[in-house]
Image (cartoon, rainbow, N blue to C red; front, top):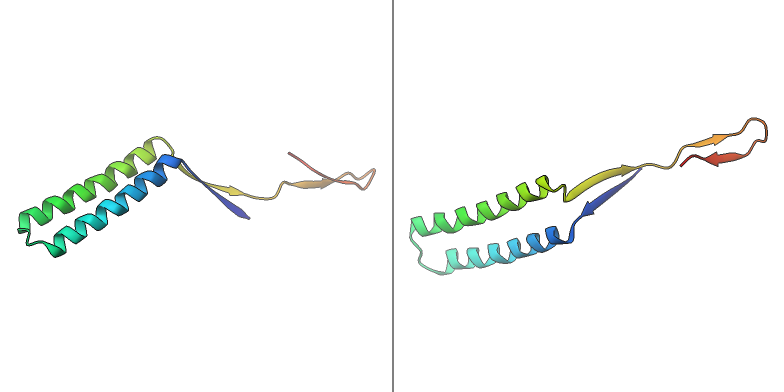
Length: 86
């Protein structure tokens, strides 16, 4: 059984932008002397970014997992020929 994963291109862009922004946010949190509230605001914006992306992906069915099995075959008893049904 094969599994097909269908992903829209904009989802990959959203994922890439999220990773880049997450790395920038972590560098700012660890390298700068931010207050506790500033840390939480940066993290909250990151969580909202990923939550929004997930909701939009779900709403538009942008990521689909489809199981793909081989087509059923049947044998014609009169001729003995095996055919695939589409």
